[in-house]
Structure formats: C-alpha cells, structure tokens
Image (cartoon, rainbow, N blue to C red; front, side, top):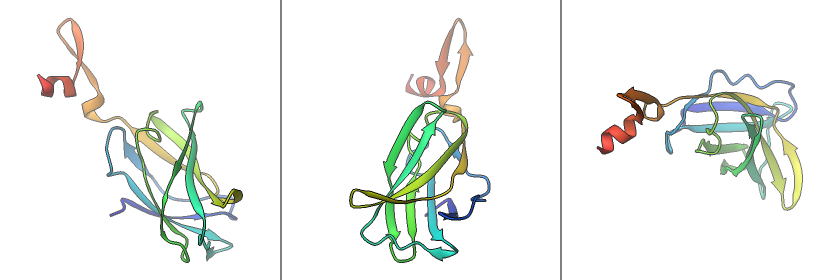
Length: 138
C-alpha cells in the first residue's frame, strides 16, 4: 500500500505533490505511487521502463528502476531506499521514461524530505557515542 499517491506531469511547469516525508532507514515502507500525465492525460507506459532520478545531497547521483503498475494509465510504484534517502533534508527528484534505449520523457521535478530515524541518532553514553541500534544489540 502506498503512503503517497501523486500525479506527476511531463508538461506542466510544477508538480504540487504536497509534503512527502520519508524516514531515513525505513525499509520497504516509504512507498509512492505516481500517475504520470502529459497534457492532463495519462502517459502510456507500454513497453517502457521508468526510473527514479535524483542527485541526492547535490552530489550523489541516483537512478533506480520503478515498477509499472498500470502501463495504459501511467501508474508507477517507487519504494524509497537507502540510496534515495542517504542525505537528510529536502531532495529534488524526477522520473525518466525510456522506450528501448531512447529517453522519451521525463516528469517535472518534485521534492521530498528525508528525516532522521531515531534508531540512527547517536546519543552520548558516558565518554563515547552509541547509537540506539548498538544499545539494542547489547
């Protein structure tokens, strides 16, 4: 089940997707389903591959394949992973569409926010730093 259902356009200048907040370290739970549209109509993704694309933190390029849910209706599913969530705060991304070897389309950019997971937060325990994961393991 998707946490976010959004509509992403290849032609409109902006994608207003609302607040997409993903928690760094969550596995297989940060799911976004998107309907890709062109001029207000669903983009036919038959025989296409769609990739999530971002330069995370302004320096780490990420390109990951998505799953096409309904090609005729332009529906895709993307699960944020450790690569797309490797840097905190606001990130910018888009989806690119390939048919064979040819790049045939791209959505306009959208933003998502990566927030820190408590289990990844270090805390001071005496004279050294220890994460909550380390404490649980002990």
